[in-house]
Length: 316
Image (cartoon, rainbow, N blue to C red; front, side, top):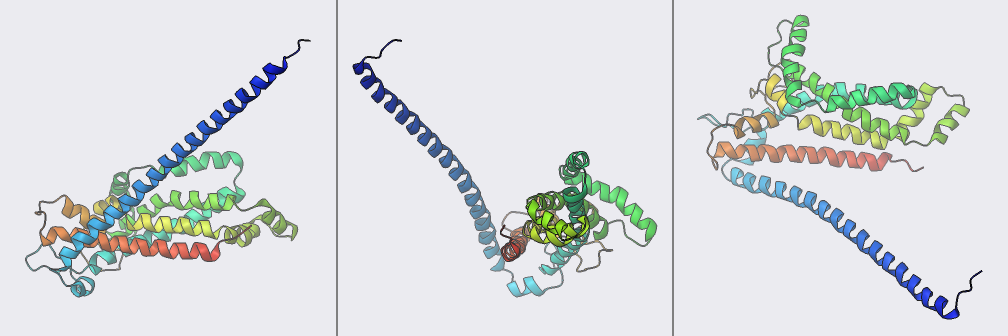
């Protein structure tokens, strides 16, 4: 065995200590660099939101200097591009709300049922095959959904109801609901699978069936996440554009009847933005007032969803 000189061991100890300090310093610098990048990414999203709000508010203030906000909220006609101009946003809100309600009436029940099946009942192989197909629905371009509603869904509905016009909110809402199903089902399933297994085992020990456990234990425990899925579905439905622009008709019509054609806020914004109205005109600035209305409505939905999540959040 070779002996180490006392002087050599005393020399190696400071070298090892300095090497560890250098590694620790490099790791700290690396972590700070990563934190800085993440912080900058968060700032980008914050400043983007601030910029959007600033533009909408700035242009809307100019609009409301020429149009009374009372008329904007109470008028029952929307004809900003006519000589006899009317600016009743309720006309566009009625179409937006009607199409969204039709879509949510399909997406929320079906998405929740699919999530319960995939989380609690589906075999592993079925889940691994079905979930990618569901997510594929969310990746289909919305313009494809729009033509699908116009050339496939509408003729089928007209076969049952011959008086149904070619452009209507019903077919557009149905296809929107199909499009939103993956969002609702995927997030709801993730929330249900996050419920601890001991809650299920406790339910089984009390004699409950798998269905009773899923409905009475898992769904209430995961309701916070399920509510988030519903809010995302609402925001997706309210903000949809191309399906409604193609299949709903873009006719300003104050109606809550899904069997009639109507215009929505997003479809109107596209119609004006692609037109030849001069920038700065009252007709052009209506898109900012309509966009601000849509943003406030979406914000109200998100605040309501946040309140629900806090109220029903479970702590395990």
